[in-house]
Amino acid sequence: MAEGHLTNAEFFTKLAALLDTNRDKGHGSVYLTQKRMTYSSDVAPSPTKVADDPLWDTHPENPLPVIVRASNTKEDKAKDGSRRDKPKEKFSTIVQPDELDRFYVRYAETCKAGMSALKKRDRTKRKKDKRKKAKTDGEKKG
Amino acid sequence: MPHISTSSEWLAQSSLLVKAYPRTTRVSSKYSVLSPKVSKVSKSRKKAAAAGSEPAAAPVSDDASATPTRLNIATFTLKTYDPDSGTCLKYQTNKAAEVGRLVGSLGKLARVMAALPEVVEDLNAPIDQTGTHTPVPEGTGKDVKVGDAKGPPGGGAAGGGKKKKKGKK
Image (cartoon, rainbow over all chains, first blue to last red; front, side):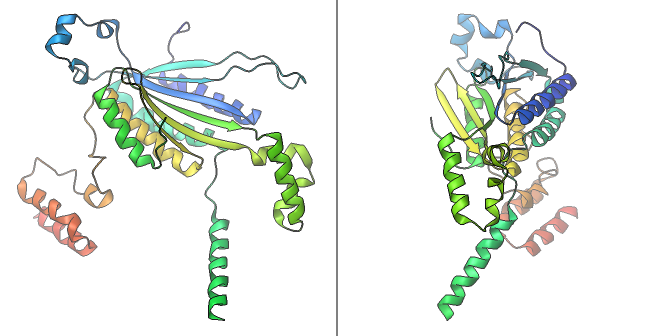
């Protein structure tokens, strides 16, 4: 990636901003990805190593960092002029193993705050169901 | 591309996949808000108009500006994909209440990716009841563990309390 990785704190501010712009826009997608951070030596192990231990990557000596990426989608110009071309926005951060727990607590908070278009818990519906039930029961009795 | 119906099942399967292919597996999530199709909008308007007096009909009055946002379909999709084996596991929800828990399970998967030990036995633990016991587990001796094993089948809250006391002594 061209622009390098962000620190965890920077990542959260940018992620919050990304989710906010998505909300203002009213539509669109935000992608989040996580993956083990592998170094070049891990990517191409010597053939003897693989032959000795085919499952070499399942038990590394030390805990490895995890890379978390976030992005949105490219936007094309709309014919009616309501949208302009916007490039894809993407950024990433590397989370060290000892910071994972703290990172994910904040990650959950940021996501919960930002993903506001999802359905809220709907209590009115349950009440309606109860009423319906009561009605049907009443009909049966009556 | 299999869609898994429950999030716990998705977590269980995904963590197995991450354990098997820790180097190549990636977990991605997609939060997407889509404007509904034009046909859907007009349909729902007709419906609302037909319903008439119902409160759902309110947005009809203030037209295009209000209706699309109300009808927008937001989803949160989790996907575990391993390019080596070609395995793909998906789970999708539209409930805001689930986001916190799902991101928590992303955290659990991240721990597996980082090759850290799992915090609690999140896959087979019957949640809170045994959770109170887990901080004590292997170090303190076998008596406590036997109590634990008996705990869940016993079921009742009172039984749990007794076992706790035994553990303390």
